[in-house]
Amino acid sequence: MGTSGTFLEPFLVGEYCPRRYLAVTDKRAAEALMAKAQQALRSAQGLIELNDANGACNRAYYAMFDAARAAL
Image (tube, rainbow, N blue to C red; front, side, top):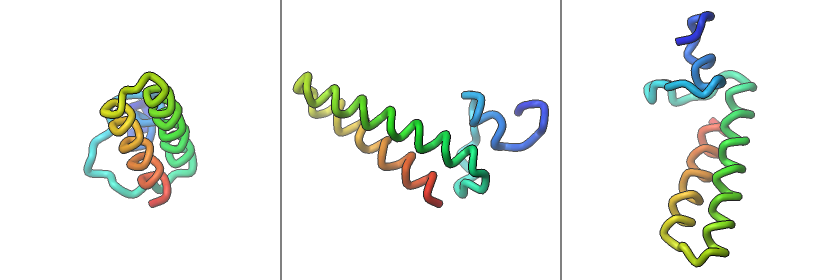
């Protein structure tokens, strides 16, 4: 964990964040998850252009997953 001892700080600085924290209760964490989802969506779109359906499905899944977590 980071210096503040909250579970959100490691996530926000790109370190490991335990899966047991399912609800996002901090606006910064939700914004970070949405940014991650948007990047995954851009990756999926690029993979579609490269005719990589499997890779695009993977990135699209994680885009949805991160967006859904941000909404919780």
